[in-house]
Structures are given as structure tokens and as C-alpha cells.
Length: 308
Image 1 (cartoon, one colour):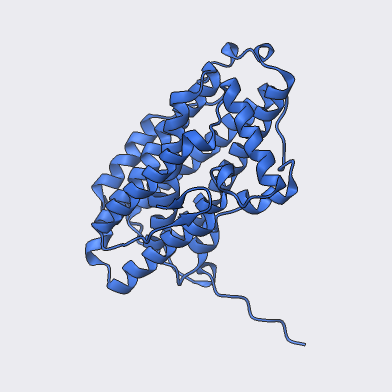
Image 2 (cartoon, helix red, strand yellow):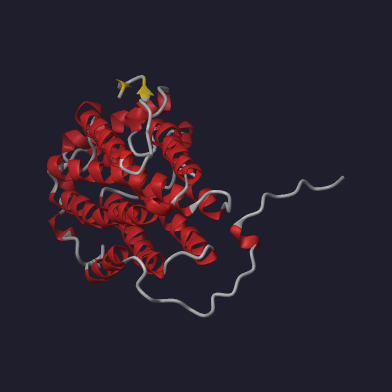
């Protein structure tokens, strides 16, 4: 019995990297590389962990916050693995060296985000390795970017439009919202430091697509549009960043309660009532900005939001 053929990926390609090109091709992206290199921070020493006082919080609050910060760490772990996959793609296509250089720093940034979230969960009583409610894994396990990055039939532009201009943009708005409502000084400092990195993550997508869109065909723009719509409908509206958006079941309701308790304690989460207008405004802004590229996002629907 023959084994079914596996889909081809960029790893099946054979290509020489020489001559090596390190010239500036997209100056606005190269600027991000230099800014990121200059703004490094260390979760172990640049967060004032001495300011955290676990005794201020009840056992219920600490346990909820452990789950929340562990969940944050899981999403950052996913970003750590997607960065090298994208690096492979940048070299395979090949893409401007500015992208390759920036993503060396982006990988470090995602690593320190994961470490900061992990350390916060540890300070609260211990990092939790997997969702307490196993059924919630379907919402937070993956957003499919690694598969997109290695798929030769999915363009870099489509991948970056979905990952950066959509998902990362929403993540930035959520972190900015968290800096405004999180009262614990250490939790707030972590949110602020991550948010500052996310500014550059978002800028990378918009700057690179601004560079590429004028030379993209209608079919290429359509692929990018489809990728963004899929990211919105299958990932964001499935609860990847926000538990209250996940399909309604006992597992997601338990995670929403975790967020509520953590928010009430001022330890870094938010609630549906507070985050809903932030999320809707973020999607609406993304839609307006992408229209300038000829990418037209439809009206989205969600049981807890309606049409937006």
C-alpha cells in the first residue's frame, strides 16, 4: 500500500544564498531593525519583581491570574516558533534582507514576552503548562502561521497581512488597553514593555505591505484579503486572544471567569464589557487602512458582538 504524498513545502527547495545581499532595500523596515536592536530589555532584570507582593491577593485571585498569565505565555510560545519559519521563507523566496534582519530581533522579542509571562505566573504561585479546561485548547493552540509560512502557494504578503496587520494589530490594541486598566505595578510594567515591542511588530507589516502593494497583482491582493478574513473568522473570533470570543461552552466560560477574577484583582486581564469596544474599533481601523491597498474586508459577525 503506497503512502500518500506529503504536500510540498519551501523546505523541498534547493537554493544557494550566495552572493549574500545585505543592502538596504526597504529603508522603513531597516529602521525598525535598528530601533529594535537599541530597545532590548531583559525580563529578569528590567522588570521590578521586588515590587510584586503576592500577599495582597487572595488564593482565588492568585490561581486565576496564574491561569491568565500562563495562557499569555502559551500564545507567545507560538510566536517564538513562527519567527524561524518565517525566516526560512524570507530566505527561500528570497525577500529583502531588511525583513530577515528584523526578524532576528523579533524572535528575541517574542522569547522575552514568553519569559516575562512565565515569570509572572511563577510569582503568582506557579506556571501552568496547559489549559485547565482541556476543551479550550482548540481556541488557543495555534493560528496556523507556521503552515502558511512554509507553504509555497501562500505568499509572504498574505502571511504578513494576516499575522501582522490583523492579529498583531489586535494584540497591540489589547495590550494598550491592559496598560490602562491593570493596577498591579509589576503586571502593568510587563504589559507596557510588551506593548512597546508590539508597536514595531505592527509597523513591520504595514511598512512592508506599503512597499509591496503597488507591484502586487489583483490575484495576489485577493490572496492577502482571503488570508486576513480567515485570520479574523477562524482565529480571532474563535477566542485566540480573548476568551470571551471563544465558542460558548463550559471550558470557555471557565476561562472568562478566570479573566474576570484576574481583572478585579488588577493583575492584568480584562472583561468582555471593557474589551468589546476595543476589539471592534481595532477591526474597523484595520478594515479602513487595508482599503487603501485594495483589500476589502467584509462585515464580520459574532454572537456576542453582532455585525461589525
